[in-house]
Image (cartoon, rainbow, N blue to C red; front, top):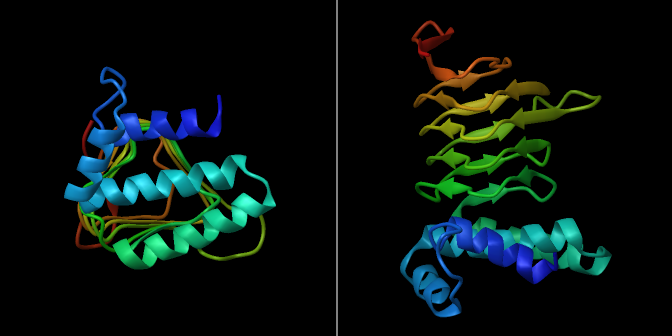
Length: 182
């Protein structure tokens, strides 16, 4: 698959409404002009594909583009993070995703969320499965965290351990992560 075809598949899934629709440059431009979320996803996926598939020249351009869109839209998904098709951002504001994150398909994230590492030395990886939702003001922080598919992390929750079964997870006032529903 060429780089343009890969970009089109991301844009089709994330901006134009899915693989059932036909790709249209006109509709893509129109949606990006109307919505900051769509505009961010357009530029992010352009930088993402250039960084993951390009040579050193295109990787530098992708990093520069990513830094510019991070400042403009207040969303920082670092180059190096692997993000599956179907990324959905509710409100592009205050989102940070580490370069050590590996995220599956159909990931939904709300405003003011962080996916990051502690910063200790050694191997670091945050693996997030398919169909995971990270609600507003939530954080996933750790060097080795695995979240299985089908997990919803409730608003204002803090996750620093692996979540190995699908369900809804919330943090109570005493800072313990619990399963709210399976």
